[in-house]
Image 1 (tube, rainbow, N blue to C red):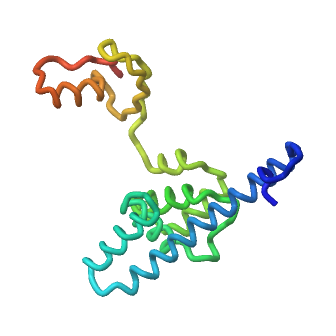
Image 2: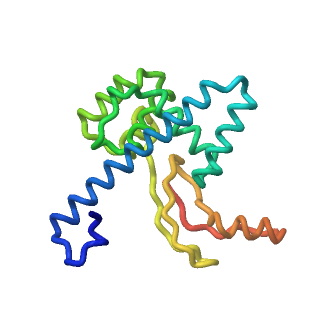
Length: 182
């Protein structure tokens, strides 16, 4: 029975156990969705039909068709034997993406990632050679707080919101600068 339906206040241990069970079920659901979309894609006759399947799945799942493509791609990349119930789907997604970028075997890379207990951000940064710079600032014009990560070595970082607003309003002028890196 779900804790929310119980009349007694749950213990911390019971709450944590139920949350862990639900997290495992959520990961299994991601794999099932990916497998289901993938089976429909494999049965599709042509590219137009495959695109239609991705769009229909997106409509049903209330997500973008890119998300449905990712689900199918990850399901195709990792056979059932390589799917671990305690590993978030996002880690598999990151391994699939990075292994393609680095032209490496995704199953070998997955084993390395699991052995190193790497999280999604660490996986996404594998193979990068450019250092990352982070600038945290409030825009002097609109007041929005930004945390911008860039691989630029030097340069000014403008406020993205103000740029979009100025372009929409066809305002000509200098863009507000959050700060500089380098």
